[in-house]
Amino acid sequence: KKNEIIFKENTQESWMYDIRWGSVGIYSDFDTSEKKLLTTLQAGDYFGEMGMIDGSPRSATAVALEDSKVVMISVKNFNNYLKERPTKVLEMLQHLCKRIRDLSEEYIEAQKIINEYSSNLEVYGVAEGATLAKMREFVENK
Image 1 (cartoon, rainbow, N blue to C red):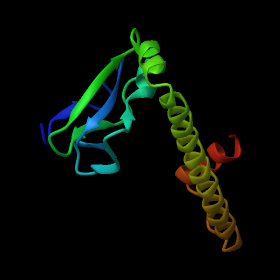
Image 2: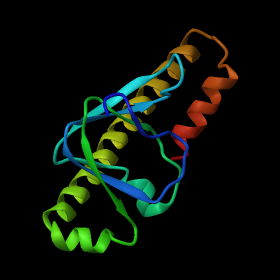
Image 3: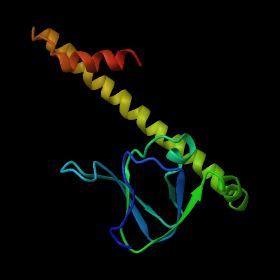
Image 4: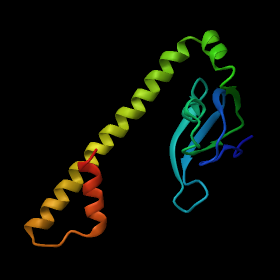
């Protein structure tokens, strides 16, 4: 049903979902004032595959944005799902590659901003704070 939570961030379950009709919003920090809509998914899209595949807790909250039908796919029936819908294999790989590529681009941009900011502090003789030092150490070691 509309506004129903499908799963919550940081919960652990071994399902992924295939949207047959309707739409689903994927949110970070859903139960906080920092709530952010990360993406909107439509019929034909799927979500929750990372948690199903690697068994890690959910990285976001999924909410039905309208009355929707989603099919739950367990680890046990994942192979059958892929046999029945072979085009989904390539779609999933493309989707995961896009996520990795987007995160890589964001990381590189953050690295540039941190390095530029740090360099400007040194020019003006301003001491680098502990937080900025940790950020710089992180981006330099990755």
